[in-house]
Each structure stands twice: as structure tokens, then as C-alpha cells.
Length: 577
Image 1 (cartoon, rainbow, N blue to C red):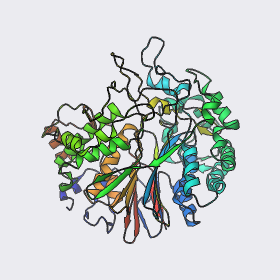
Image 2 (cartoon, one colour):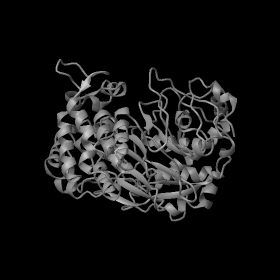
Image 3 (cartoon, rainbow, N blue to C red):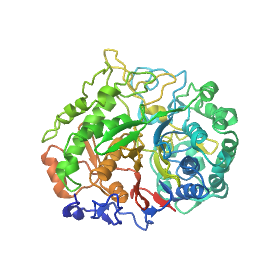
Image 4 (cartoon, helix red, strand yellow):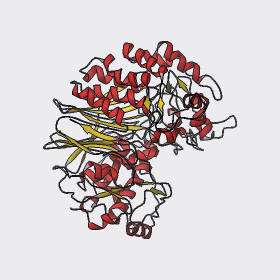
């Protein structure tokens, strides 16, 4: 169904792109917030493609692919560069989730590099001596916020499974940029000057202050010799170069300092293991959508898609206020179930089969009326008695999509959690504050634990949900994902609906306004006034004062190769050859 003409009246700048043959149903332009003097973010390529949040990282990935590297090889190189040039979002001190598609076998594998809590962590980790919740900023800046980093261990595992080029050489570009310096981008400069408490933390201030006492600004060259040295160790020893030896000791020492010290030990570091296994693949329309398993955001995204499967959103389009109403109500239902039931499945019973049962999802979809009303969690088969959730999840993070020359695909979401993680640094990189993704309130008044309560050795629930879309015959169709904290579920749902239901190009899909509906909150970008008025009449008044900071990346397969798009709200690009 062509996008209706009224979408062209959006009060946002138009993003015009040639429609991909696979997405030929959608022909009109869509719109996105203006971003002055930026390079073209969309691209097409015949053989291979990368879409990521920073052009320097994209170049590193494309260079690896041109040298005959695999999608996983490129992911390693990209992560190493992102940790340097976009340290507010991800890095070697953080964690990640990845979905990998093997073109030859048509299998999808989910890799889990989520951080874990120290063995000494208790359920009261984020409560003060009086049993009250700590202020979020105080928790983030404390040593208690840092979990054992997992991104490098995950990439090491995936490289052993699917790498083609030697591990050590994949860090060359990042090492060179760290040693010789890179140009600070406007986005990084904005984060350096932000009021985020981590930006004012001693380590961050030291790193981002020049010799003359002023802070780095856009256009300055920033060198990081410590990061180059850390990369040398990881390039030589793999994940053990980070999780054991001097770097591990530095991490442990740093989180034991200052307020709210951690119980993290060298044994916690050395004992970390990433996970891998079959991806969570569920049917949606004519497609198969594959995401990671719990504790990722995959189950929540799959619930939302499963609810929408039982609606008429696919017969509508992005100019239809009823489509956005349906989208928002499905989001609310999925968030309610995700928040209640999803946690680390090694510690809690996640009723996944019940949550994804078609009959259950059909019943949840039937709760969507003509106007917004109260929403609560459902009662899926096998649902345990758990307490309410009290998780706060800021919107840091980064997303990468890669397709190599053999058709193998990586969709990876990677994070240090909040802006500059905990604000603490060792070895030229920031430490994560991932443990603040646990519920700050561990149990309810009756003593029932929250599914996402803190526990020793436990992985906090995540919203990260990298997605790969396949045909029923398991041929590659598309890959997408976004950063954005708890809003990731809504951002990813939007792009999948736009690609699969509304047949938009990747750039059109990522550029659409965002709408995050959770509980009674409707946070959104600016929509055309008729849509906003129509939603208000359905008891859905959008809060658009701040807008939504997604960072979507998407690539689709076409008969001529690949078409990619990057979110105009950030600095990413899609490039290939």
C-alpha cells in the first residue's frame, strides 16, 4: 500500500531515497529531523555492507570485508573503533548481544556477551542502609554499577566460530586511530559538554580536558595512548587479555575505589563466559524474525510483533493515526509482560512459551480497543508469581549491522549502558554501569522477588534486541536494531513494521518519527498535527518536548545486492562495495 500523501506534510525535513526492489511497494518520501551539513547516510552495494553509528567505524568494517574478512571479523574491528570514537555508547569495557546468520547453513545463532554481577553482589545492592532506593546518579557513579565486561569475550567466541582473518590484525585501524588521534565528532563533543554526571566524573574530565585546561570540542584531534596499549594486549591474548592480567587488575582496583565500592574480584573476571545458542526465531506475517534469547530485549520485541500479527496494522500505513494507535497499544502490552516476567533465565523462570503462544497473543491483541485504557501484565501459561519491576535504563548504546561477501550477517547491539558508562576509566576505556539495569527494588511487600532483581553471577535484563529477518526458507531479508535503553523495544518494533508491513526503504524506515508507549507514558518525536490530534482523541496524548534519541541501523537484501540506512538522529552511515 503506497504511503498516503499526507505523510509528506510532516513538519520534518524530507529524506529522499531510491526504493529498493524488495521494498518497491513503498515509493513516497518520508521525513526525519534535520541534521545540517551531514553526509548521505543511505547507500546501496552489490557485494557487502556495513551500517554503524560512526563513519570511522564503518570504514574499518568495510576495509575488513574488502580484505576478505567475515561479518564477525568486521564486527570486531568496528567495536574496537567505536569504543574509541564513540565512548559514550559502547566499548571494550561493556557488553553486547549479537545475532549471526550463516548463509551456507541458513542457521541463526544468538551470542550473549551481557555483563554479570560479581559473586558478592546482593539483592540489596542498590538500597541504602535504611533500605531505600539509592538515587540513580549515585548508583551509576559508584563502583557497584560495574559488571564483568562481556563484549570482547563474546566477539572472541564468535570469531573462533566464524572468523576468517587473524584476530590480532582486526585491531589495527583502532590502534592507529588511538595512537595518531581521531577528530572529535559533534555528537561526542556534545556528550563531553553535557550535564550527565559521568561527564563530570574525575576520569572523564581528565580524559576530555586539553593541556590548556579547556575541554575537547568538535574538530579537535584526540589521542588515546592508553587505549592503543589495551588493544595491543587484547589483540595478542584475546578476551583473556582483558579478563585476566594487568587490565583485569586495573578494573578490579578502580571499582573498589571511591563511593559505593564494588565486591568485584579477579576470580569474577576470569570466570566470565559468554553464551551462544539458537536465536529466538518467531513467525511474523510472511517472515521469520530472529532475536537473542532472554535476558535480552528479544522476547519483548517478539511479544510486540506477536500482538501486532493479530491486528490490521499491515493494511494501514505511516500516515494513518489508527496504525500508530495500534502500534502504541501493542507496545504497552509487550512492555507490561516483558517488565513483569523477563529476567536472566539461569536464575528465574521466564514463561517464554506462554508469552509467545499464539492464543495468548491473540487474547492480548483483543484488549486493544478504540481508545487507550489501563494496561497491565497478562497471565501466560507457566507464569510464575513475581514481584513488580523497578528498573531504570538510560538510553546509551550503539547498533551495528554487517553483511559480508558470502551473505553472512551480523546484527549486534553493544553498550556501556549510560553516557560514558560509570564515568570511570582504566586502560583508556570507560567501565560499564550495566548493573544499574537490575531492578532497584528487589521484592514486593509480600516478599516476591522481581524477575530482574540483583543476584550474584546474574545477568541484568536488557532491552537490546538485534534482529535478523528471514524468509520461511531462511533466506536473508533484512537486519536492524537500535540503541536507546528501554525504548529500544519500541524503536526496533517501528523499523520492523515499517520494513515488513509498510514496505519502506531502510532509510525511510529508520527516519520515521518514534513513538515509545510504556505504561501511561507516550514519549514521541513530533508527528503531523492531524495524527497527534487523532491520537489525543483516543486518550493518547503524545509528549514530544524532548523527542526520541534512537540510533537505528538497517540493511535489506535486494536482487541487486543490499540497501542500507542509518538514523538521521545520529552520525551513522551505511557503506559497502
